[in-house]
Length: 353
Image (tube, rainbow, N blue to C red):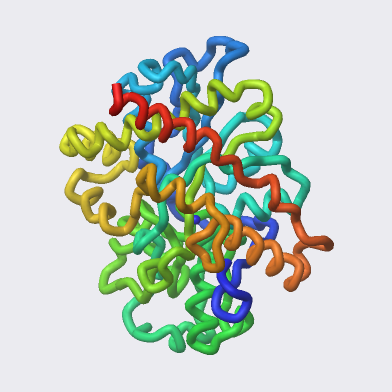
């Protein structure tokens, strides 16, 4: 769909440069219409335009809409689906939506370019749903040397690819990198146009349809490397904090629904992903949805990547080290945990009543 110490974990965020290939984008199998009850209706002053794209940790937003959870929490959400994850990031930066589902690393990269955004919620950590998938004959990371490898440049799977390569002693120059939107990267791999691809679920399912293909490594080998979030434009946060709170309340209510209505939840998320329910169940262990308690902990200061503040600082330093930022991005105002704290307090009061 998301940096560590400079020695062991590096994040490369580059401007997207898409290479068009003559193959089918697997994203076409996913419904791409704007997720609103009346897409042509004018947006009201209290509406929050929420973007999301193909990642298991963000599909619960679809449940929130279809099960009426947004309404029960007074969230006037206009849910917008994006085929391309990078497109959703650019749309938030342009102010054409108010909130988006995106990774920590991509958000730090956005603010380094001048965007004014705030992380208000941790959706999940990737624990295996970001994968490097290879053709027959490639059995080790070292075997990638000289091979054509496709990924969406500058996003989390490009990062994961580089992370694995560095661990194996390879540099970015050791491969023939092919920059493609994630869906096209998977399609190019299936068509035999590249030797490997770095993609996230559900595009992993599409890529593995190539005969004799296999997973080389995944985010499971790099725990905590990819975290995913609800990110809002600061202007919207200041003007409509009640809608930000409503979104977060709806999110945790949706997680409760998933626990008690798993079959219905899987049906909705699998349909949104464009895969079968059985295929979607395979994603369950590859994404760890964060609980309320884990959210509260993640926003606290710390000395490792479990702390968002620490992780953002490491990413900022890396952007400078590789020359993608002239000055260190200011991440001091990147996080706002008051909405998660308010939800926790209200939940505590409700239990006491």
